[in-house]
Image (cartoon, rainbow, N blue to C red):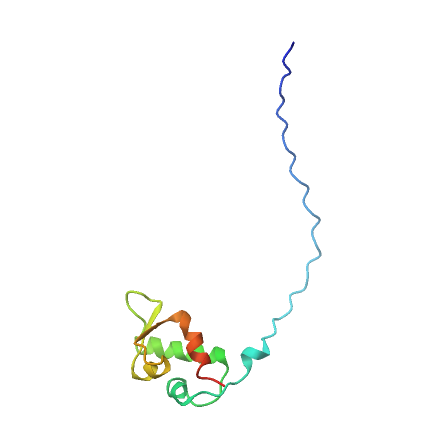
Length: 110
């Protein structure tokens, strides 16, 4: 019996799909729900102002306040330390995570 010689078969690269026609890029429309002006509670209005503003602007203004007053924790940058105004927003907690910020905001807007 003779042994059959094994042949290495090189795999062929799959054929590339034909290029699709380039689509025109349209400008993204902002979601109306994000742009809706919300009424703020009195404690939140002390931090960001009293005029009704969208949720996205509320978060931006809170971060401006946090950065301006140096309330971001130095060691763990994900944590926000509360001062007198923020302690009312944070339901008496001395420190919250930045991920809890959205939940805190939702309790103070209508």
